[in-house]
Image (cartoon, rainbow, N blue to C red):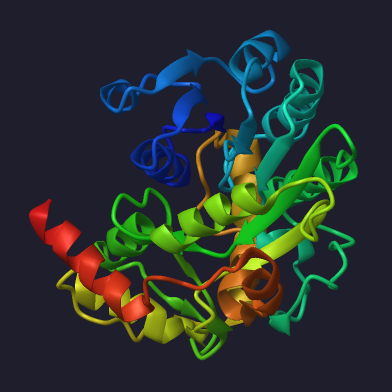
Length: 329
């Protein structure tokens, strides 16, 4: 296949690229930065922003499948920046696919599009989109996901995946933040740390994307649908974080802060950084406080049934691989 991966220089995007190359696909990537490692793999690179429709059209042209992984993530930056990349960029991808005759579009979404104030325990794809979002990232990802699913039709079939907390060797978000805060003595659990969360080891997230692309055909059950992806092994957040610290050769953390304090601190940080932060990431936000304090795990039965998804790497094996990777570094 001729395949485009947007965000091919990122953690998940690069892992998808490597697996596609390994199985013999003709891969190209659209990224904002320069990634020499992609050239080493024989990947054709297009450099530009998703909000640039001309660059997007050039990257999409001639492809059979598009994996739209690229996005603006995190909690820093203005709402306008998130909209330009996540919403406008996704509309550009859809338009380019239609103009170029691309038949399949796999979209990387996030479980936070359905975030519920009291948390989620075993929720499935019947959950509605959140009525209100406390962060620009889930708000714009929800809007983009709905656009992708609405675009499903005779000429272009689409599917959205919602992998939860992707981690593993090469992670640039979850693991580095945990380790950095622990080294500085600033890692705390919000609440008692007993709230259950699920996560997704990087190889399993990649597997889900390839399975989705291979099953995405007109008339397929997965067309126009979204799927939660995870390990299917919910753990107390305290246990997950401390097992990551142990893999890194660091001491476990026991310190906690009350949720009301973290939530109030998040609101204060949002206000201060909104005035003087200049795009820097605040140490806490109300959205982050709620995510850290509440239960978040999902029923992946639909992904198992429709995608044939089965996590190939357990949390224990993933932690062993992560530990080896960190020791080599």
